[in-house]
Image (cartoon, rainbow, N blue to C red; front, side):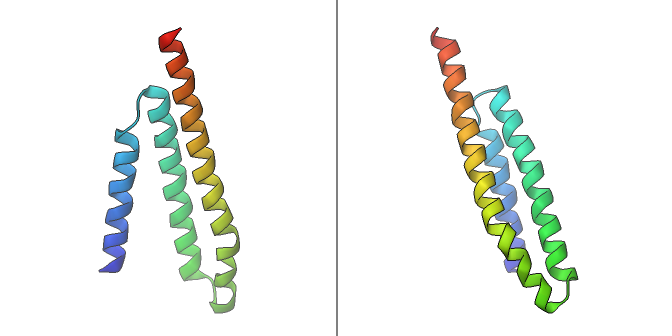
Length: 91
């Protein structure tokens, strides 16, 4: 039941991240980010289930920093796109 709730939350979050964009460049960024994010999470979970016991815990070492980097990069890029598009609209 918890996995279904988590999956549903991911789907809803992905949908609204894409829906609440301001323009085509921003939407493209969010779609690419969602695709990369979902692929990475699926690979992470597959490896978590397939690797033997002591080794699967090492997957968490790159997962945390990679997740943080992805979120920070996407947020900065989205802000940059919004800034560029607002400058074009006013100037």
